[in-house]
Image (cartoon, rainbow, N blue to C red):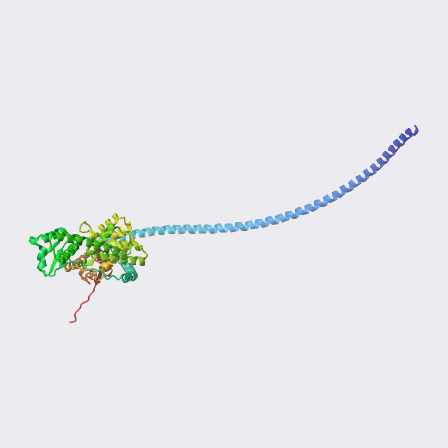
Length: 508
C-alpha cells in the first residue's frame, strides 16, 4: 500500500461522513415534518373525539339527572306515603290510648264501687255472724270446732268404709292362701300322738299293800317321800295310791320306783333307795332316747347334750292335757312345712319349733314366762339370734323380728288350738269366757256380749242409736285389739259385732 493511499482514504472517509450526515439531515427533516403533520392530525382527531365525548357525557349526565330526579320523586312519594301511614297509625294509637285511659278511669271507679260493696258485704257478714252466734248461742271458734269435728267424723267414716273394702279384699285373698298353706301343712304333718296326759296314780294289786308302803310308824313312806321329793297320798281310794309333786320328772321317777317296789314286794328304806336310783337312771335314759327320737323326726341335728336333756324332760310335762314334747315335735314339723310353702328358712323354723317350749322344763325353778326362759337357755348354748327371737316371740313377750318367728308362732297356735288337742278345767274355761264377755262389754254402746263356740268367737250386740255401721267396724277392731292385749288364749278368737235396727208398731 502506498503512502498516498492513506490521505486519499481519509478524504474518502471524511467525504462519506459528510455525505451521510447530509443525507441523514434531509431524512430527519422529512421525518420531522411527517411527524408534525401526524401530530397535527392526531390532535385534530383528538379534538374531534373530545367534542364527541363531551357531547356524549353531557347527554349521559342529562339522562342520569333525569333518572335521579325520577328516583328522588318516587322516593319522596314513598316517603310521603309512609309518613301518611305513620300519621294514621299515630292517630289510631292516640285514639286507643284515649280509650285505655277512659277504660282505666272506669276500672278505677269500678274498683272503688267493688271496695264499697266488699265493705258492705263484710258489714253484712259480721251482722249475720253476730245474729247466728246469738241464735245458735255458739261463738265462731265453737262453730269451727263443731265443723271440724263433723269433718273429722265424716273422714273417719270414709276411712272406715275404705278400710272395710280393703280389709274384705285382703281377708278374702289372705284366707285363701292361709287355708291352702295351713291345710297342706296339717295334712302332711298327720300327728297322731298329741293329747297324752301324765298319770300320777299307782295301781295296787290289793289294799293290803298300802300298809306295807306306809311301813312301821310310817318309816317307809317317809323314806320314799324324802328320796323322791313327792307327796304320797294313801287314802280310802280302793287299790290305788296317788303321787303328788310339782316336778313331773320327780313324779315319774316316784311312779316307776313305787311300781317296781310293789312288784318286788320287798319294801323297806334300803330297798326303796335302790329302786329310786334305778328308776332315776331309767327315766333319764327314757328322756334322752325320747329327745333323740323327736330331734331325728323333726330333722334337727347338732343339739347340745344339755338341750337334749332339757328337751327330754318335756316328755313328762303336759299343758292343758297335751304332752309338751309331742307338741314341740308337731310344732317343728308344722313350722318346717309352712316355711317350705312360704320360701322361708326351714332349718330355723324346725329348730325353733322343736325348742320353743323348752323353758317349760325349768319354769317351776326359774321365774318368768317360759318363752323368755327358753330363749335365754337356747342363747346360752350358742343358737342363732333368729332362733332365739322365734322362741322368745312365740307368745309375743317379744316382738317377732323375722318371718320365721311368725311361722313358729302360727305353728304353735295350730298345734295347741286345733279341736281335741288340749283340755282345760271347767273353772278356767268359765273364767275365760267371762273375761271375753267383760272385755267386750267394757266399750261404750255395747248392749250385750256372748262368748260362743268354746270361746273361739265373741258376738257383740250394740245399740243401733249409739253405733252406726261404720262405727261397728271400728268397734270390732278395738275389741279384738283389747282381747289381744289383756287375755291369754290358744288359737284365735273371732269378734262379731251385730247391729240390729227394729221398727215396731201395733195394729189396733
